[in-house]
Length: 470
Image (cartoon, one colour):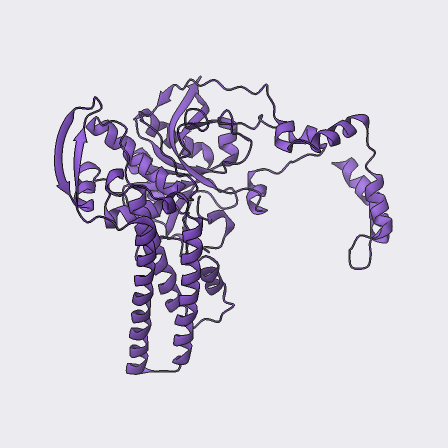
């Protein structure tokens, strides 16, 4: 460190002289920068290789191997596939419930309808945006909240409160009752057109509000009624688009239940709510706790993300921030008891897609490029270099000598991806790139549950740490 400081002190006079007055790159500075690179024979070989192959291919450490044995694993059957959509949060939440239902009722490869919940997710998000525009109608166009709304009118990403609020409100149906469609599997075009319509609708609402912003009393109440009437008409149009693209959600359906051996058990009629009550019945809104490992913020505190929800009259995202080792304790307790969990991470980092392994030893970028990538987890989050990007279902841990050495998640990219549809992560990778875990309260120690009595610190929805998982 001392040598580095001395070297920097010696370089300061030249650096100040070589730059242009505004801090730009002068010819002298360019000469200094370029002159520092003396291409060696090995550099030439690397450059030639990079001309014809990807950095990831050349930096792959083929000697990094992980065995596939796990000491503790939750029983699951089959794998789901979100295709070209950002619905990982929804698939993950439903996979947690699916594993419990399959085990409890001895089912085969049963799957809930993701499309059914997705329909209402999009309708509710449209209402969230439109009502948000009405609520902020007196704020200027360049207000940060108004800008956030128009920048993110709708999306197919999300997080666990969307799962809990939507299922509690609308129930569940089997996959056959509302199958996937091309648009549910490939959401980009539908999302683009709905977003365009919502932005147009938002402008009209703000224009209407601005025309009567000085009204008082009954006239102000009349204006509020007109804005709400406009919103209802806009939602009718969104409902039409969703019905054409995704199908219309069933209000009643018949479901034939079979055992894991293919034996007929029963055939009954259900509503989405009665189906949920009979076969799931979990208290999703009150029975779970979201845990977070965000080293940028104080641990053992509760945080709430403002306007980060799926349902306008639902819950904002609320979590307890904890050291990663505390989160592991609860994860292990849940797995040992046979209960899968909602889990999210920065899945793209040090990920060998062929093997399905997430391991810090997978790639040696430093040696290939001749530079050091030295940021820790906190610094990566602070500089937007890392954040939670994907949700999966945590189902297994391998414990050796009393400590976890690796973990496994059930993914939603189909059974042929990764390791038999799953991803395996080393414990070291877990430390660096795991961010969120949702666990049932019965696995949470009393002292952690007691933290929920705190008044949450409210954080803005536009914080990059809290962008929806896709």
